[in-house]
Image (cartoon, rainbow, N blue to C red):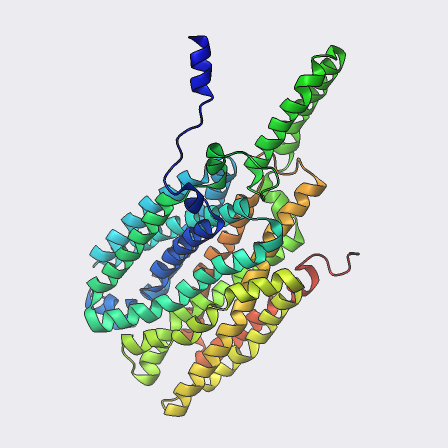
Length: 485
């Protein structure tokens, strides 16, 4: 009976259907990209809709529309800002990232239902709050999952692909939202959002993490990097096997090793509690530079979300369809994200990030020239927005890849710096906080500037703000510039 029980315990579990495909790098990347795109899409799809629906559905007076428009977008950013550190801590202290990923689905579904039913302005606020919480989970856990899945050598290309899906979602969603709202009405916008969520649900439920897939096949220690939890489990497994045959013959050594382990275990908690992981991460200038880079990028994009539809409505007398179509000028360049990530992997992130911040400033400042209604002015607006799209995408991939590199290099120097759970999720939580702060800062600051000082002052401020990201990137992206290689 004992022999039968032991044989039953060691029997391999039944393989899930399409295990190899569902746990493949490509499918995991596609799942993360769809999840990130969905959250970004739900953020931006109401950009050209809100200025019209606030008046038509919610009854907001004309002179209050700009304030409500900016405030509703700001609530989304505030939810991510508060939720991301919590999500990062939970993800780094839980070996199963998929649980957090599924939780994001429930919140996202509730937010979308409220979005479809919303008429009162406060219900719109609640729906944006829930969407922000969902985005906090998706970005933090999704990007950490990518680091768990692939090796350091190609992380720039993978991050470029994932974050370009975010940029593409932020940019293309106003386009689709404006077209659908103009042609089919508000509820059709809700229907498209629900369809995208269904696809997101199916892919998230189908995905199998690498560490779970290893339960059904022989473990290979040379088959890529699967994250801090798998690495720690593997090292522990190797310790058991390396000790077992030799220690039986050397009881004195066994006691010595046990004593060393006990002393190390006693010291480890003190190291971990000495400085919280978040503070360790924030003490690294290179990591703070990456965070500031994504803050600049997203703040500029969301500034357009907050003011551009209303500006072209006033200046050109455009409807929601035309206000949405103008975002195509920013959407098409965002598709080059994977190429930028590949270039970052090959040539290093420093000069690509510096070029992105520096080259974004001139077209932003030149947008001040768009100040009256004519065909030439419309063409100029489109051309300048295309230039902004191509330069902004140069920022995202290098700084995201550099973020994971900072954590990896810190762990090589000091393996006990972050504890056994690592810090990838918390690093990307800070990254996500920067994006959240940008979505909070961008539309509110842009709305205040354009109301008080006008369009010209806004574009000049955005140009200076974009260039400010090039200064820390020059010194710290890819490592301290004076550091010996």
